[in-house]
Image 1 (cartoon, rainbow, N blue to C red):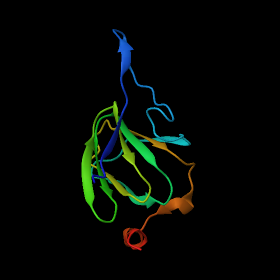
Image 2 (tube, one colour):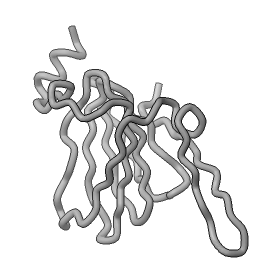
Image 3 (cartoon, helix red, strand yellow):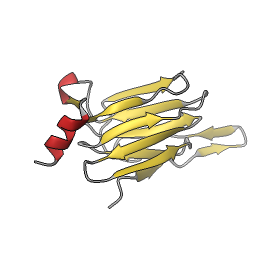
Length: 133
């Protein structure tokens, strides 16, 4: 089974332009508790490098592009995020890394939980031990 799972955000609009609505339980499969975005990431810098015990996320590149790497401890897959109408679903206990940000990249992340440092797994070897118990 692939780690790459998409949720689609149908564009709405008319001759004035487009709009995308993100709604809990509709276009986003969980109640949104936190929203943040990454921008201005310097060339050659990777982000992420962690997993979450409980938190689920949807990541969408509002503009620009970046490469997302997902790893569940058994398989590792990568995909380019480059569309404001598609979000990448990231489940709990999935290691995530973001790479190759374009200069104009704005990566929006919707989270199922409020920020909780105790939910993070920041050491890859510890992550592997937890998923392989």
